[in-house]
Image 1: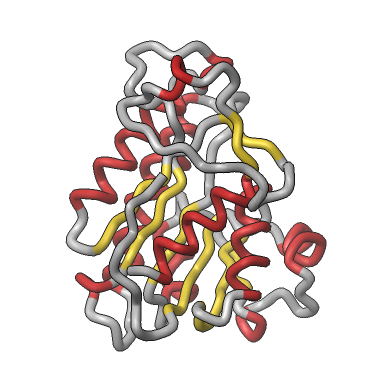
Image 2: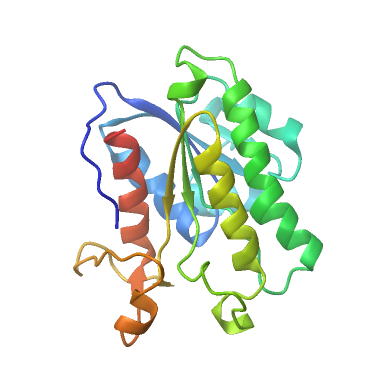
Length: 220
């Protein structure tokens, strides 16, 4: 899925947005368990869900848990201090309005990039990193609602923004996702959405997506 060659020499402090979602929860757990990762922070919209999914006690800044919304640029600032890399696991729902889909999938990523770049910390802004979980299928001109619908358009815009930003960007574009165990299946790389037609049922576990995203951080 990614060709990652260079290895980071220092542990990266990371922030996971959407940390109480199905992918975000796995990212948080894997990052906390990875000795190659430094401090791990979570950006969530709901303290109750943070207690349920992240096993925090106070679920506040003292435990690296920050409450806010990626659609609110200012709410990201406190969470970004000292962060070297952000792993974006935020996503809109097909049931959200068109305006909400744009706000979460595109404006939210713009806000995340801007907040990371402006945040205080020892790592130069241009050396900081955003790892965005997007989706396979963004090259389709008119995807059906079952394939992602208009959400894919905003994901494509977010991809372009991350890769054009004055920092390091990685975009991970998985196929259909499951909650199956990770590390049990071979991962197949493709481009231009060719795998949508080459594979009968393209599905991969979210745990493997999380693993790929974290390797992008560790290897720089």
